[in-house]
Image (cartoon, rainbow, N blue to C red; front, side, top):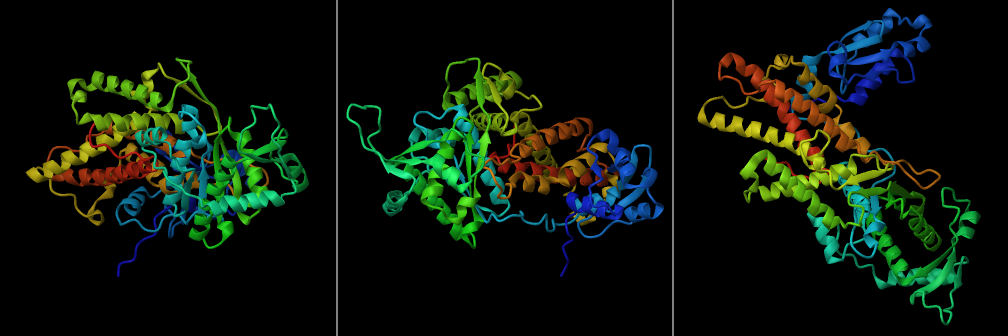
Length: 539
């Protein structure tokens, strides 16, 4: 039985390099610019060496140890030398191409560390009355993306609340958001919460005063949150939290969360394996802190230690400044995308077959507009600026365009094979990867294919439980990765002719390039799947 070689990894290679230096701290920097990659792949900077070695001079036996690196999961070193910049390492590139492209994929990085076997992602924005707005949309799209990333890492993920409003469901469907539409927490759950309220030392009966019209009809009692925070010594809560008026609706919301936690507990091995992440806009943070505390008071279970808040920065809409719904936002971007497509492709873009293409390009534009910025930062939407829907290098449409170019390349090649112009692509084990000498080819492998599994893993990581409420996630990582990949792929594709003249002496290079770009295509597809974006076969 043929053994499967372990896939080389960036983290494993960096660990081996650090171990060879015999230093606990990480001294190595991975090169990313095409200019520096011409002569080195990793660098231990001179300043770091000066702090680690006397006079900054690396002993010859250490250099020999670095040069001899290899083994499972580690890229082999071709050479190591000390220069004015520091200690430079260049890898055996042909072997790296072979190990990453020449065999079926072996095991990737280890599963996500941490206690989470299941995660409940809660978006209070979907409980807000009225139309969904761009401000509501940001945490929803973020939670949808994070759910896909977590599931790709084997983490059971549950989305709350269910969206029962028809108009809201239609908006989410337009944006290819997969969100549950039904949830029926049993009346016994709400009843249990009411019983807990009746025994709660922080709750007092709320008598309805005559002549007070502003008081909601379904108020059950009021809970003194500040007293609870002070007595429990909780940190990270807003100091202005005082008294919360508890209503039937609030209890139903908690019941739905409890039901999701129960599902998560059943998916994991123990209750502490299910964490709850409230994905909220900064405007909703105060209200969610109130609900967080109410839940802690009424159901002080083990999962409460894993209740965290992922807060999104504000969404500022300019031009027009009047309020706009998420549906109007989608239709506006769709019209801009249609106009841009007609301008570029003429009457072709008016064909019915382009309807779905323009819909997907619109979703890509909106998702990248919302998700390529760190979730803590403000987003400004200039709705009169149509640059988001053209081929600008930082737009979702530009990413989809380059994905479609790869589809066109392989479709063209397949049709040429069927006509007898080219032979079929040989098995990967028979390819000559020494033909891959163009600098853009190594850039695609080293900066994208090599670290890609770890990019997905890091984007899905949630901080371990700690004091305080807020957590930070690298939710922008995949969009930024795809944007940079598209720019470097586009530069390479514009410079290099892949399908050359059908001469046998040119086939080795063409086959190696097709294998490389096939892996790049698959990487595009995997990354886009975390954004619920299907690959396009044409643009």
